[in-house]
Image: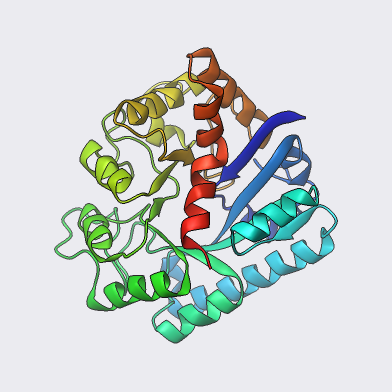
Length: 313
C-alpha cells in the first residue's frame, strides 16, 4: 500500500463505467482496486453530458449517470462511500473506504436555481460551470473572443452555490468568466483540472496572473494529466508534469496545488502514469526533487481537503 492520502478533483470515470463496466474493475484509468492501493483516496466523480446533444438530452443523460453512480455506490458499499463534506470524507477513511464526491461538469442544463438545489439534494457538491462552450451561466475557454464572462444568471448561480456550500469550478471557463467568478464568489473556488499556461500555452491552462489571484482567494488548482495541457509537442512524461507543479510552487502555490487528473476523460496519459496505480510515481518524483513530505502531502490531497473543509456543507 502506498502511504498517501489522495484527493483527485476530477475524473470522467462514472460516465465511462455507465457504458457499461464497473468500479470493481475497469480497462480505463481508474477503478476501486487501483484506488485502494493507497492509504486513502477521495475521488471527485464528474457527470458530463455533451452540449451538442441539446439541453433536454443532456439533462436526461445526467440523471441516468447520477443514477448509475448511486447504484455503484450501493453495490460496492463495503469499499466506497459517497460523501458530501469534510466530515463524510473522514468517516469514509476511518472505515477504510474510498470516498466519492459527485460533481457536474458543464452546467448547460441547470438553467434555474431550483434545478441547482435539486442536484444539491442528490449529493452534487461541485459544479464546473461550463465545458469550453458558452451556456446560460458563462462563456467557455473554447470561445476565441468572449465578450462576456458570467451572465447575470451566472452571477446569481455562483452566489447560490456559495450559500448552499458547493465548490465553484473554473476549469473550462473563459478568462473573462474566471475573473467574474473571482469577483462574484464569496468563497474560495477551484480549477479542478488545469495546468500552467506559462509552461504549456494552452487555452485550458491558467496564466500566472490567474493562478496568483486564485491563490489569494484561497483556491486550489488540480493538476491535469492530459498530455496536450502539459507539453505543446513531443512525448509527455511525468517529469513534464512536475515542471507545472514546480512553476506553481515558485509562484507561492504550496497551499494551492492539488491533483485533478482527468482520468477516463483523456485518451492518453504521460509516459509513466498509466492510471491511478501510478500516481505514487508523480509524488515520489516530487520527493526526489527535494520537496518535503509535508509539501507533497499537501499536493497529494491536503490542499483539496482544506478547501473541502472550508466550503462544503
